[in-house]
Amino acid sequence: MSLLAWIVLGLVAGYIGSKVVNNTGQGLLVDILLGVVGAVVGGFLFNQFGEPGVSGLNLYSLIVAVVGAILVLWLYHALVGRRRVV
Image (cartoon, rainbow, N blue to C red; front, top):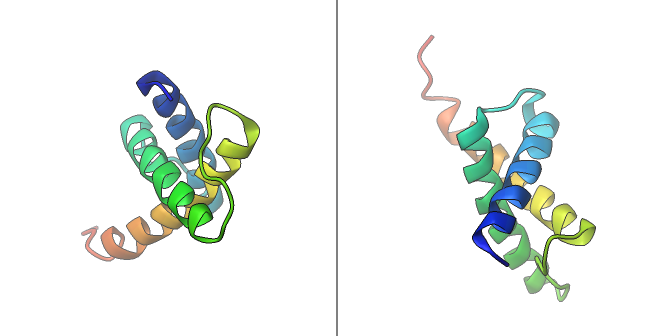
């Protein structure tokens, strides 16, 4: 996939994952970054279970990326959420 396709997939996956995990986004840049990382993590996990990972800019890849983004966002909030000073 091209870099632009990864960014678009990451943005959408990060946005959806943010809405699922905490009902608000983290900001455009963080959503993209965590979404792209989530797409990689989701692709890796799906490959480990014998399923294809991210294969392009399609609905299946979006589902894989969202699953990965949810996991990454959950870990992000578990680690960074505790350090936040109010």
